[in-house]
Length: 284
Ligand code: C2E
Ligand code: MG
Ligand code: MG
Ligand code: MG
Figure 1 (cartoon, rainbow, N blue to C red):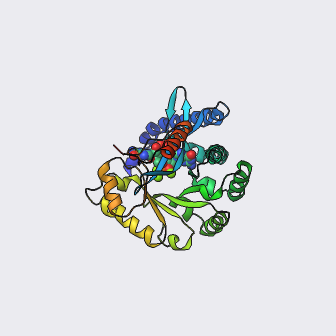
Figure 2 (tube, rainbow, N blue to C red):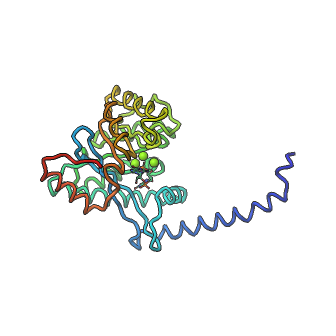
Figure 3 (cartoon, rainbow, N blue to C red):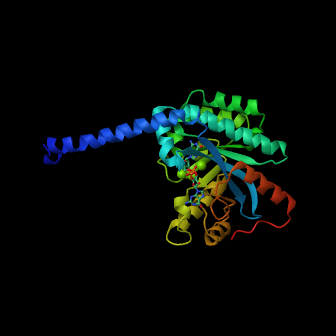
């Protein structure tokens, strides 16, 4: 019997657990009303080709505007996942992202849109049907749809993953692995699943070109390229990081150096500016 777990400790710990549970239930109930109250919105972060500094697409990122504050998705996505509500919200995200994409498509912009897919959403047996139905309803070009999944989504059920990814590929969608290198999956899946792009997690980009992070980032580029995949670096904030990535053959990047996530209207302005100008974008 370990003295550390005395009943005294337990009774002290218990009230805070209850408080935490009450807080979580409160957030859950606020989230359940968020969609009806129009509190969710999407912002879009530009993705660039490093070589010619062109915007090639946007990643859709959800925002929750609650009581005058913007709550980080890192804080509320897990709550949506544990309550199962992520399926519904994930559908809302697909609809909003595709609707936006259709607007850009109709304006003549052949731009890619990346959508984050929660592992819970990916595991939903109806996920594939939902994606196809949403594609059809909005009339967007599937080749420009980039579905971002994480290693966590992949490892839980290999048979389901293989079948789902194969079907998504057969309709033309692109598949990316988000936060690559931070999960617990085996590298074998890279050979067996139809993956188009690796997104280098910002943790490996952060300290470039110092320490070992440059080594990991450049190794991911080599790995991705040798498997015939595209490689995009996330969280690029400095010119030094961009130069390092360019020198190591990384083709795409995303990050505050290029742009923060923007409202859709500003993305359209960016696309128009790019179309009208011959000079490539300058990153400060
Ligand atoms: P993620 O998919 O890896 O998205 C990248 C995150 O890094 C975004 O944070 C983005 O704003 C941030 N970021 C971009 N450039 C930089 C940079 O240069 N420096 C730094 N420090 N950060 C940068 P955000 O929007 O807060 O999203 C956090 C995470 O929440 C996302 O990570 C994703 O896992 C999840 N998430 C966001 N939107 C959605 C969504 O619509 N659906 C789902 N399922 N998850 C989402
Ligand atoms: Mg992402
Ligand atoms: Mg990421
Ligand atoms: Mg992340």
